Amino acid sequence: MNLRSVSSTIIVFISLIMAHETAFSQSKKVISMETLLNEMIDREAVARFPQTDFRLKQASSYSRLSTNAEDTVTWFSNKDFNSNETDHNFIRIEERDGQKEWVLMDHEGAGTIVRTWMPWATDSKPETNNRIRIYLDGANKPVIEGNMLGLLDGTGLFPYPFAHQSLRSAVSFFPITYAKSCKITVTECPFFYQFTYREYPKGTHVKTFTMADYHAAKKQIETTGYTLLHPDIMALGKKNSFTGMIAPKATQSITLPKGQAAIKTLSVKLANDATPEITRKVVIKITFDDHETVWCPIGDFFGCGIGLNPVQGWYSSVTEDGTMTCRWVMPYKKTAKIALLNLSHEPIDVCLSATVGKWQWDAASMYFNAAWHGQYPVATRPYSDWNYVTLKGRGVYVGDALTVMNPVEKWWGEGDEKIRVDDEKFPSIFGTGTEDYYGYSWGGKSTGFYEHPFHAQPFSHKYNKLNPKTTNEKNTLGFSTETRTRSLDVMPFGKSLHFDMEIWSWTDCEMGYGVGLYWYGDATTTSNRIPDEKEVLNVPQVPEK
Image (cartoon, rainbow, N blue to C red; front, side, top):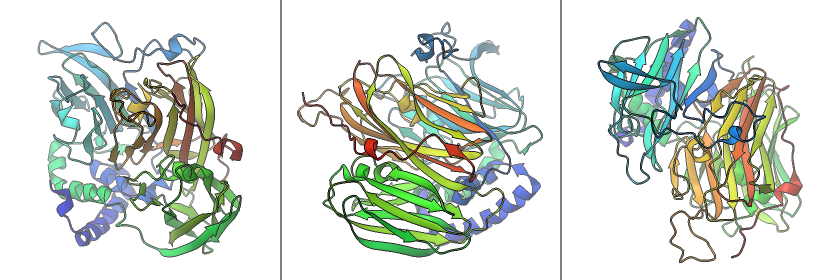
C-alpha cells in the first residue's frame, strides 16, 4: 500500500464514514478490527473512560524467577529470555503434527492483541527461521502464520506504520480481535517476546479477526495508516495565543473560553537561541475547572527531553524550528487556564498557543493529567524499583517520556517495567527491559534516532561529547530520551495504578532520572506526583573523564 498517496480530501470523507460506522458498532456493542482501527485515530475516545471496561494484560518472557518482591535477589533477576527449552520463560511446549510448538500466550476469553514486540536474535540483522502461529477461538489451524519477525515488522502482513522495524526489533500495533480465546506459538525456542492484549469482561461481544475481513478492510487500513503519519490533519477549533517575554522566576498565562470545551492542540515555541536546559527549567501548568492537573517541564511534556530534539509522533511532535506541539484532547466543563513558569535565571521569548474546540461533557469524560518525577542522583546498587507514578481512583494511563543521564559507557536500561492495576498483588504487565518497553532492543548498541507514531528515541548521546573520536558502539554515556504514547494499548484502571521501572545498570554508579507522565482521570483521581521546583533545577551533568 502507498499510504502517502491518499489525499486529505479523501481522508476527511472516509473519516466521517468511519465515525458513523464506529457509532453504529458501539450502539450494538460489537468490538471488531474495524471499530478498533477507527479508535486508533480517535483522540477524543482516549479522553473518555472506555465504554467496554477492559484491562490491559501482557504475556512476556519476563524472568519466571521473579515471583516475590520481598526476595530482592530473584525479584531483579535478568534471566528474562529463553536460550533453550529448559529456561521455561514461556507457558509450555506442545506437539502438533509431529512438530514442537512453544506456547507464548494462551488467553481464555474475549480480547484483542494490541501490541507485539520481538527483538532480532542477533544484534545485527532481522533474520530467523522461527514461525509464529496465532490460533483464535480454539481453531485447530492458525488464523495468522508467518515468519516470527517478518510478519510483524512492517514488511509482511501488516504494513507500516501499524508494524515496523524499530532499532533491532519488530513491533506491531495492529489489532487482532478474538471472541473466545487466543493462543500464540512459535516453531522454535523463543528468545525475548512481549504480547500485549486487552482483556474484556465476560459477555463482551467481539468479532474475531479473519483474513477475509482484513483484505476487505484494505481502504480503511490505508486511511488509518495515512492519518497516523499525518497527525495534524484532524485539528479543528479556535486558536488562543500569547507571544512575548517571560522574566526569570515569572509566570505567563492565557485563559481559555468558558463553557464546555476541549483543548485540541497545544504548542510552545521558544527563541532559537534557547539553551538545551531551558526545556527542563520551563514548566507548563494547566488548570481545568479550578483544579491544576498538569505540572511538567516542557521537554518532558512534549517528549523531546533536555533540548529541542526534533521528533514526530501521533500525540506530540517537535519540529526543526523548535516548535513543540501536543495533540492530547483535554476537555473541561467550565474554565481552563494554561501557564508557563520560567524557573531559569534568564528571560525567555516564547509563543504559546492552544486550539480549543467543542466538547460534550458526559459521565465518561475525564481530565487530562501530566506530571513529572525526577531524581538525581539515583544509585544503581542495590537494584531497585523506581516508581514512575502511583494513581488512586478511576482513569486511563496513556504515556510517558523518560530522560536519563548515564555517567558511564555501559548500558543502563536492563530494568523491567512492573505495572499493577487495581491493587494487583503481582504485576499484570511485567516486561523484559527498559528499551523493550519503549519499543526497541539491544539498548547498549541501539543508540541512534528513531521515531514512530507511538514511540521514539529522539535524543541519545552515542559518543562521549568530551571525546568525539570515540567509536565504541556500546557507549551510552550521556543523555537519552525514550518516549511511549498509547492508543489501543492504553491502560484503564478502576481503583489504582502502580507503575515501577527497575533501576538496572551494568555499572555501580549514580544516574539521573526524569520522566514525564500522562493520564486521564476523574476529578477525584489522585497521584503521588507533586510539583518539585527544586528537583527540576537539579539538572544532571555528564561527568568529565
